Length: 83
Image (cartoon, rainbow, N blue to C red; front, side, top):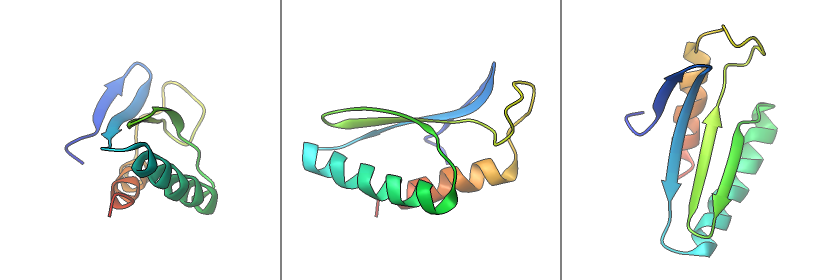
């Protein structure tokens, strides 16, 4: 979790994943897509040839809602997709 940055306005977690090649980036995006569909949770994603930026917001749509343990767990699950 030490690669995720916690932001407070609004509350969110952000992380940038960097890869050596475009094919590695695509493979990660495919695993990420499968995982988010299975979890029914959809972070904001932006990407380029060799990077993926993810913004994970609390499940509730209220800007005042703080991050919960489930948010950190989901971030850790995303980290696990690197293997």
